[in-house]
Length: 362
Image 1: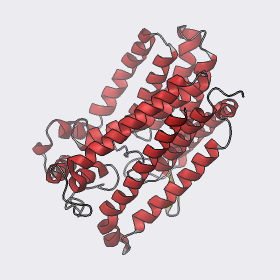
Image 2 (image 1 turned 120 degrees about the vertical axis):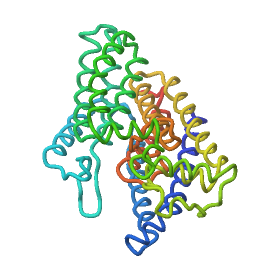
Image 3 (image 1 turned 135 degrees about the vertical axis):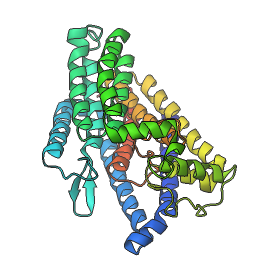
Image 4 (image 1 turned 90 degrees about the vertical axis):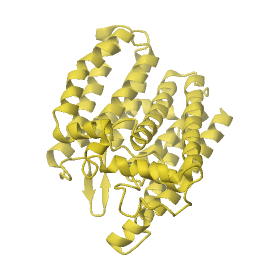
């Protein structure tokens, strides 16, 4: 496991460094315009990196198997926070996704993702002998996961809901749940997905923009078109670090959801391929940890963490290149950070913990 630990640590550190550089490059002008301080977003990003590293060190300071007895309290806490957010949370842009504390915010769905992974890892490892039974094995964890998905969807946050649903499905499949049970669940969710995508006006417009962004180039298709322009202007080697034009108030969210486009503009195809290669290496090494772990609880934790980070990277990059509709998910380790950055780093600490303690006596 030592090679995997070293490789995961190195890849994560490189991605974090790329993120720090690109957050400053893509946000300096916006920060100066809004706050008179070109390093405003950089300083906040660095703070969340530090908080994430501190949380990762906490996760690495004890045997991960001790988390098993805290899986239910942790999930209950995250559920209560999600409920509280819906009831008393402050609505921003038509959504209730954050608790605000002065200049800082906390997004409970990020905690809920990690808490659900730990809970599912616990219950799936305990139910391995009956996991193929629909009533006794599959239904209880599926109902819990479904309730968490519903709370996230009500914020509303469809992108995170879809990501968590896919992560849950991957963990169920690897645990040995019968494919037809998973298929039944997917079919049951399709009407909900249809209503969420096509019966909500702004999401329907996003779908139309995905199919043909040039139909409304100054409206809903504007962001995707500007992303295409950024990627196209970069060419093979890019226009040079700091040389992006799209970040100068043309491409909205250039330092968050669409930071990959700025990487493509400033560092070119070489830069984007390098980022893709780093995420693929992370996926490979993380899966090695998961499938080489002799203990079920650790295996499912590693699988959930790697699936979460890899899937969110795929969704973010897919939206930036126009392969999928925009979903509002950040690029792990690279996008301007808040709660998501903090918990992504913390999740890597948990993954390294699994790799470190695998095979040892509890």
